[in-house]
Length: 546
Image (tube, rainbow, N blue to C red; front, side, top):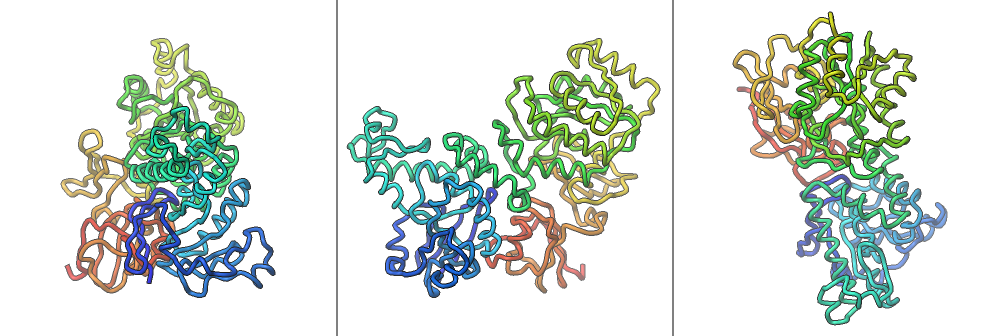
């Protein structure tokens, strides 16, 4: 009997435990799979090429006759069950075909239960381990590095080199000190997987992946093709992370988190009621209002316009959302130069926003690339852009021009509560009588003395109380069976859930005997298709009779 349970996720990548024949393994890892699966050595008909046609697969492919691991093929993926080890043979043959890599991976992942361990034999090298784990593979063997050793290849995360490189001192492992190439290559693979595990634990595997892929054009292509499949990648990503997002490469702007933030700003977010918008530059300090420049901007605007921050790579951040992940938790290289692709990407976000949320006046208090982006969006939307910068945006002349442009406009209170709730829960609420109190990120939404929401200081997201959930009429619900949660809600207890739920979302648990508030530990797809693991980390439970 086999069982797999993920305990930590970072997109498709997982850290988990796999139990097989009484042995408990911590994954991802490289193991002696001959000892783990002794029957695999004599198995026939599981090594069908991935590119084979449907008729060939039908006639010759075998999933293994019920033995572990259970083999899959892009044209025959339905055999594994929850807890199995899923075997994908010949995956090394697709590493140089980015389009097929992304297409076949998405197809297999969508058809195989999420609570299975994924084994890719004879493929893991120090240079490919990060990509494989990022793609959702968990278990590897030493065949690929042993073959590299037989071919006199010296393996590093940056690639494979001549064995003579071992004498240059680039590595000081035990194998290098002993002049043992095979030992070095095995150690290099183990070290890379250990590093990847660290990045998964830290919630920063994407940053490592963007760094590692630079040494291989094929890996860059794979990453880009995966990013193009937004629906597939987005549903496995948390709605927020506890660490800053580092957008250091051109691939960063294609991250699903960035598109999700922009789509929610355009499609969900309800701006504060005003007819005037002012576009402002971003700041290095987050949230923006903590910076000196934005304190000047806010004092000058003085609530006479809706403040929108133009920034790369997020595109547009309304003032109401400046604390919400990733707007309040990202870092980018600051050079003052925005390339053509970057400008087009951000201008498209601005144009879509103005099409969804029209204003009578749009003032651009911007310079440089940000102003170029605003002008591109204005031309697309047919907006007359009023530019108030006179040199640097914080210069006295620029601030005076901005104040003069807003002369006579009525003051409107920025509705952070309504804006955040609409972005987070895709609903509108009446905020009359509500107040946001507290300092910095330690804040709460109150009606009189009654608390409706607390603010997660790490992510900026709202955490509803039971009274707060009454203001959110539908959505982000998890239906459970007839039991009272005595702790966390496990996946087998989930009957149904809102398909929009992602890991990290605040959810309301409903059942015949009890309701509860908590945070989703899985996305909706995994929650419904898994038979193991924590689905919701419960914060508070209430019996129905209470």
